[in-house]
Length: 115
Length: 113
Image (cartoon, each protein chain N blue to C red):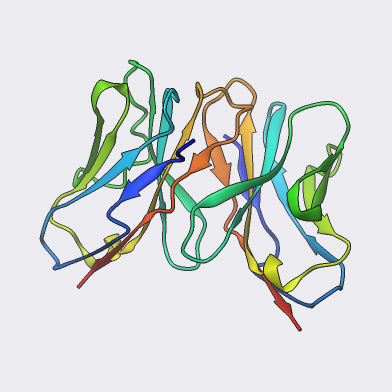
């Protein structure tokens, strides 16, 4: 079956512009995660959605970052007024129901470059 | 909250040599442990996981890891590496009953001919 799908795969934009990154999780997975991976660094947790519960936004670095998940499936991560430090690979992952013993299934990421 | 330390940012080895990638974690409760691999321009793929039971866990591509509770470690090993094992490897830990998975900074394994 299809895995986690992210789009676009690459995004280049000018500083100050807004960007939207999309994640389509594995069908039936209720848990969805967004991470940021800066060059040469590990994964930085951003936000977590589980079913209809309120999302865990504790990892969002500033109020320029927001995310939504409509219909419990597709998620969009929005970065407003982008800055150069936002340049990174943004990874999305999903798991069946978010239990801590379940591995996460990752998309290939969106490589965001801010000029 | 739990945390993960990967002691080596880069590990260069020759083909067919053994390799060990080190991972230590800290947590106040019992944990689940994972190793993921990331090939260039791809997302992370699960290599193996420790949930309970036997402390020696075997994963895909000939990798294995051993959970050592007293040393709070979960080192990844392979007895003989291939060029195709060149990738970034991430150790991750999640507290039991907690949805928060934390990842290490990664170890770049480079296998040379």
